[in-house]
Length: 97
Image 1 (cartoon, rainbow, N blue to C red):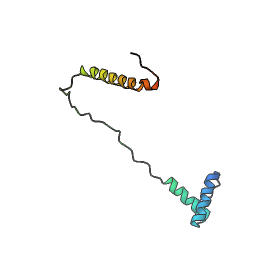
Image 2: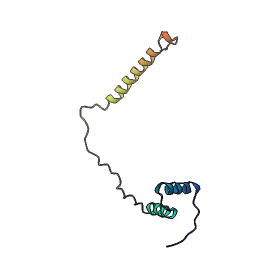
Image 3: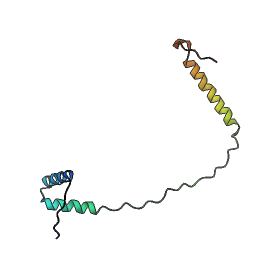
Image 4: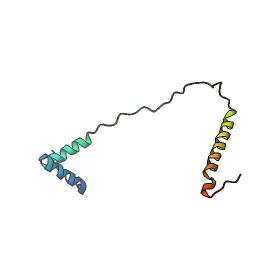
């Protein structure tokens, strides 16, 4: 058995005193149990790196790559129309265009 003097932070001291009051065990038993539990915490298991395996799907022949810009243009026109509806004469604001 080893005797040692150490400085314990006030919050840790309070935790120890609370444990003594709860368990009705002597102070040195509570300290030793707490140290034993804290020092015997198992190391986390090493993890394997996350790896993604791509799936070759190929190109969908039904898609027209030149049509993507037309779709984007159509969506922009629809957004503009929605903004113009929001700026109706009822609000006192007018959209010019």
